[in-house]
Length: 404
Image (cartoon, rainbow, N blue to C red; front, side):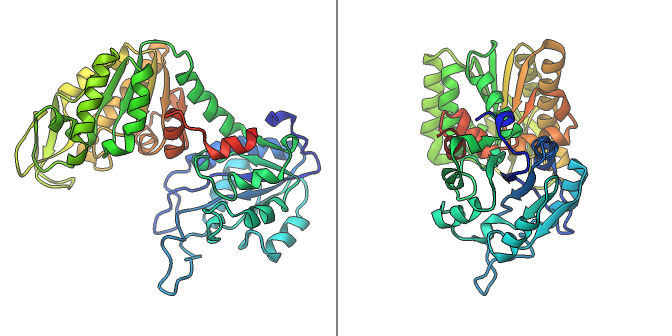
């Protein structure tokens, strides 16, 4: 069912959103991208005369329980989300410290069209992450129609993202605008993209990106590798990595990926120079050395200026760009130059050369936001793991449940 064809007037719409946002010690949201991106779906449903019941998870309360074995309902409460959500949708949001119990049922029953109710963290229930059918059935009873707009959780077969959809017929369930945009964004890159296609892959571990890299070998013309994972590739080429973060057990995997790339005429571009430091600190002494020539006692923390120049040239000539993962420790100002430069190169290729650019979730989103360039790329994904699995060619449970 297409979103706009969903009959919601006078109905209660149960909407799974992804408000799993970073919250600091003062209870302030440090990145509200996911809330901002969910706003169009919420506003549309309100305009069509629906009453909205919003569900979301926040953090991992089942894995970080209090000493007495209970979930920390203060640390993981969705209450801090309310003010930011109200700012983005332009109306008041009611909140209930319950998800499926009597208090939640009473709040839903009293809800009028044009009003919004936010339920408490779905993960306060152990059955959420297990896809529990009884929990999902209780959730489904709260709405007449179901809308899944939580792309960031679409790769999880959880009660509120996948199982709940089984209790709604096809004409009473749909994706929201955000989910639709995420799928369209990935499809544009995967299905007959404009060439050359360049994938920029960074982050800490090769093991986290093996399946993505394997998939990229099938359709990318260029793969740029940065971040700590580049040091594993450096080892595979016989280089010295000093005290850099590496996965020694993945050196053979890196060698195999390099060989496969040659066979498939896909160029893998590794850093030619590296910014190294004496320790993992913003204030550490630093210098630039050639890639593969990092001395003992030093560790790689960013790509160097020659790598930035080389990578930027490749990006400038690209017509389709995927970016997943930073080039270095961008959270530290002195080692953010490489990541910020790549963000600027992607934005420039998009704006000046008409390239299609997809920022593939996770740290890449934080990086492009930090650089102030999120509005200068084609699409910024709200789902790190979900986008990764979608690009790897996997069927996501949250998507399959709506399409079935």
